[in-house]
Image 1: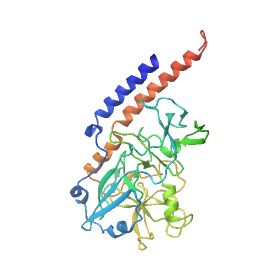
Image 2 (image 1 turned 90 degrees about the vertical axis):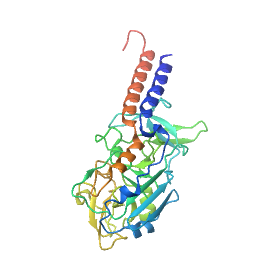
Image 3 (image 1 turned 45 degrees about the vertical axis):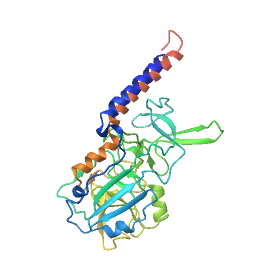
Image 4 (image 1 turned 60 degrees about the vertical axis):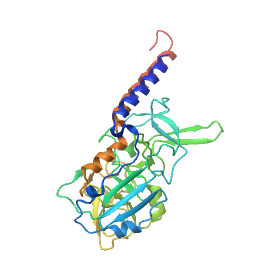
Length: 332
């Protein structure tokens, strides 16, 4: 009976933590106002480049004037595996693997598009560098042309563990006899996260499958996303197809150099190839991000850190109880 009590307590805990989030968990849309996104419109308009970008079927963009762009996305990934690993939860409390760095207990879950959060986000597409940088928030810091969000390098435990360095996989056979392998982060560098507004599909580094489709195996990197401050996001190769080294980038993963869309050069962010550490994604914004954008982006991870810590503690206690039941009396 104790494991059942533990699960029920976790359900109550999840409802309590997520219920405290803005919007009560009923909304899955992020909609910063156009006025706040456009208030810092003092740079060159990049609207023509964003209009010509190869937006995927999950995403659509519209423009109001030369400096305001609105992205609407279903959030549904263009690439996904059949199964994933996710931190144990009240609904899925059986641990099958543990991540190597943060030691987070993972449960198996099938892919489902039914609870993926959509988003509508306004951008200033006349970005200019600010006097000082702004630390990259948790939650969405930008969006890919495929429609998925980009997060900073770290998981919900904050600036402690880069997500791409904490991956783990679990191989199993389904009831139909099919061999499967589930990973925390898939081969395209993406995975979902829960939240009050639904599961936000996102990357913590270069979207490898998308980049391969747009750039080919050795070509120059093309525009594959937009950061919340309006500056473009690229993969990890320069206009000549050479790999960009992290030593070439500034603290925000930015660089000013020619690209296929801007042959005369432009400041843009780079998601380096093969990097799994703290420079796998943006650590800060070079441009201006409004407080409303940051607050609304946070709704996508509302309550997850506190909830995850408490659920992990509950799962660990459950494992200890099971181990104790299996141990012969008089042993430890």
